[in-house]
Image 1 (cartoon, rainbow, N blue to C red):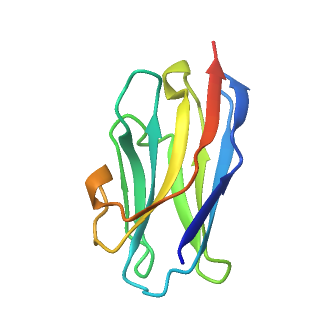
Image 2: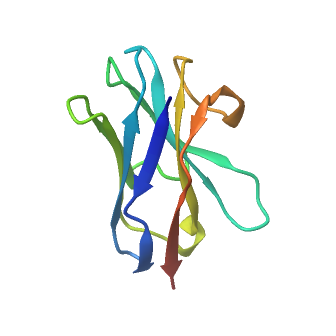
Length: 123
């Protein structure tokens, strides 16, 4: 049984930083992708960043490039998202996702989801 558990959300002022973590269990294949999506009130869930768990290749949404960094720890089976220079428009619930698809970019590619963690950026 696959489980993804996020942590690290919170309230921060604009320009501040947060680090989100996702602890994965039950993932048995090394060629899956893991990533982060976010959903703001009244909006659809959108792609933020993804990492190929075996190769370490990464991808980012244009809106977060240069500010967010995704990384993984193969030993601890965790994926982290460092959020720097946060803006009020980054406010959303952030979800960890895992996929058997190489090149995770969309919600329909995601096979597993975490419960989400709230990130709120005040202006």
